[in-house]
Length: 427
Image (cartoon, rainbow, N blue to C red; front, side, top):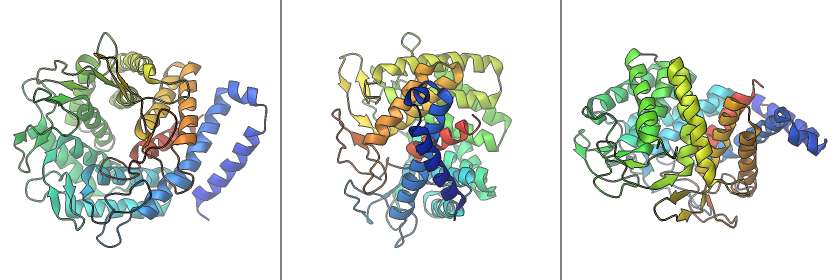
């Protein structure tokens, strides 16, 4: 029997023992509450998320992984395969192997890495395609900075788990392409979209409204995330400099000094062009900033990041609801809110507020984390067919959106589970 299955059985037993004890004591004791959280996400990771993606997504006909599964768990084998999806699958199974040591996850991580190297990496101009057809031929050859960042992230994680030098070499090459082509050498930061041969174009691919939206919070967040993971495995001085620069961009440009919300869209000179606040990105950035600054080891930067991280978490709490969930976003010009609950935003809420608790020891943050997990467990987890629903309505009804696709992957929810397992294993 695999070690992780033995651990899951032990966790189920301990969880049952805990649940039959004094509920008031369990609710009041942070250690018991965190252990219960760790037990439950471990089970969801190893008995739901990873098995769902391991069994449902493998494309045995054309190689790699399918491009889409709908709400009814119908597979679409002729759908294009998105770069974001495939890079995130690579990260997820690489990280799962590194943490859980199950070789079945290594086989899937290697399958993903081999497919990416064969079909997504552009051998002529460098970088990775945005998508390929079901047979692996390129379908969208644009070089989107957001997409590229996840290839750095996933390839660095594969190297971290396996020591594979081809993966690290490719991640380094992508880093150099970013610094040569995507970097705005006049006013700093990174531009969004390029042609196959790295000439800048102004296509709007992640919510930009006008041509003035030249820089986005979302892209910078995931470049920072990617550079953090690259620096873990390649502690190069230039990577450190660029990672520190990204952290400072958030502190000085992207975090609104008045409200502590993240500014979603900006022009070339960092002037805000949007009043929309994305609560999920707020809470996600609060812990990714801490992760980056912690690796850099700069005490002055760390002090700034810690204080800013808590301010962001407090601001994002505006999106928390009495049922424990986090709504999607709010337009602060009109006051209009999108009250949909999205799978990825719940995952980031759970880890983001646990991070705030670890920084401060204040139990209201732990409450936020656990309450959101309880909502997620009860509403997002598909206990009949496996996996997670992609959205839930204000009244708690799952939406009929896809369960796997261009943006829908095991990365946010899988990462949340693995972050909690790693963090709370030391408690």
